[in-house]
Length: 363
Image (cartoon, rainbow, N blue to C red; front, side, top):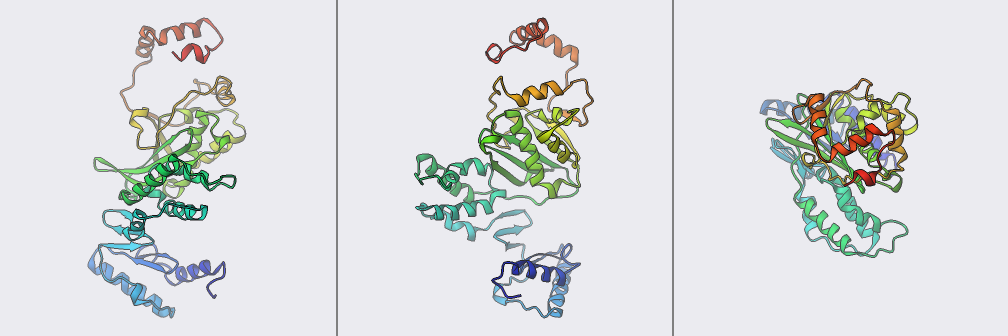
């Protein structure tokens, strides 16, 4: 298979995977012609190197000594990342040019810079929100008019690339924690695990929202949950995990009696996973992207349909956790009746079948 053909990389990858079959899950990791050999002890690592060399020799494959790094390194560059015992971080050789990256003068130059940022997106928190002004410049109808907002976005991206954090390796003996959030511009998530007393980040995820996806806060929060769970599917599919959000939308989503259309597809997709939901206050949910919690318009059909279909008397199929000690229903009722802001709303609700308007309850 000569290189240059569109299916040459896949063919070569299949060849290497076949040659190293049985070793790729224990002794080494493979991506095309990049092979990294791992070991817990000196003797184990030496034995793994010997096995890989024997397989390559038997297949008549040769290595270039100039491109190899031997032996027993505690830190190694692999696929543009630095792999060490502490975790994964960006390769300084790849990001040092970012410091002196020239100001993009054309769409082609700008796209080249955004490609670099996208490659390291798992290290960059809230990437989509930061890069949104630059992505708008690459649109077909854009005149490439750089504004002050674009310059600020460009400099911010360079800074986060240089100061990206070290991400930890996922561990199967620890529970995965997925924090999701949404704003009017995009959705974001943080996948982490609690090791000791610290929450160690495994990866970040962010995505910009199109116009049809921004029309309701509730739908944006649900979309953030569905999208991020799908993005981290390879981590979450076979493990029970904790889903943390500052919005309780998922409860009524999972308790629709007769879901239709998009909601039915969401429910079907989420039923493949096993998770608990924890509702957190917005002030405690800052590790996910900042959320602009504006109210929906009174005519929002999605929330109206949800209120019609969701019954509080139905059994909750997921366990909901709270960050504080729960109150009894009588204590909550008493506290609400004594509250000067909530009491008028309750009285109007109890004395009338119509819901109060947003203008009445907003103050």
